[in-house]
Length: 471
Image 1: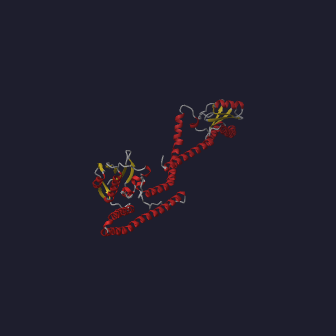
Image 2: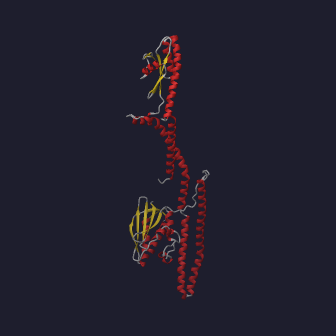
Image 3: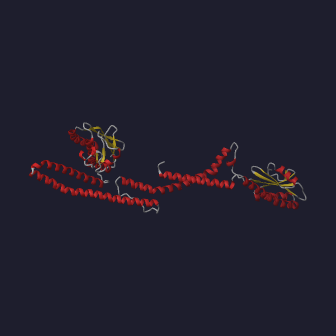
């Protein structure tokens, strides 16, 4: 799980559900849990309440029976049943005076015991409590008042052990827990989602700005106008400060390169003019003048490349979008480079050349390919060739340029695209390079929305891979 959003969301959701479930279970067990003492107290309270109710009913019923007779007593007991939502029975010698009511099991036996002992008797079954109370009337003996009430018990889901307990648990879960659990998960999920989103939103903005800076857009900033004052806001503000300073330094560096390059052109031109005048007047100084002219040419080439590099870096998002037939462009570059490589006992071999058209600048793409190919010719071994492939993929075109030279140390593969970077003796200034060619190639490729990377070949040599989006 690599996403910070998913980690925060699932962690909050799990903690919320566990806390809610624990709270519900603690509340349940604390209130109606199967503790022995609590059960005894509940049963005792129900027995006392039912006994008190029957005593009051019995006193009133005795008076009604003595004054108005049997029918009045039965009518009174029926009214009491309706008012208290309980069942009351009047028994004499095991027979009920209230034939419309179904006598509960063991009620007759309990009534006989109560009448014989002339005391209150009760019995607690699994689902109900039965209390028997003898009535003492002057005109009639042997009457017993019996009342029943339902027990307060815990749900069978927690204590049932019969054959159908599995189905009972399932039904209990469905009707009593299922819907509340779904609602709980929905509310907890929505709340955790919003919380995780609010926590990771600044990180997403910061990552987006970082990616823009890695692509050369140093104007990228983190939006802070609608943020609260917290640690993430402070981090975004620090990032913006760092980006501003970096942008200022980069612009200063580019401006310095551009200004220095322009300033060097005038003295270089005057130097070349002086060399020509000296050659006309002092013919014996020809070897020295030739050397000066050669170094002036290198300096002029370096200035041209510096100006091109600064132009590329300043126009990353303004590349022309003209159709470029890449296979034709590559064929022309290979043809010219092969003509020069023939004098160095080296060659260029095109292994695969698909017909591909991309959108971009023919000039900049040509410079990128030419710099990479000439770099391969410069360092490939004598008598070897530089292998080139042009393959069309589903969304990109892939160009590979492979030489058979000494390669590059692994820790320097990314740095060879940096201006003026050089590695071992095999790639020093005496080899003829200026150290800017691959930097220009990288900027040109990035300007076209592509990528460029260097890898060492196992058999020996360096392979540079360029990917460009198709038209």
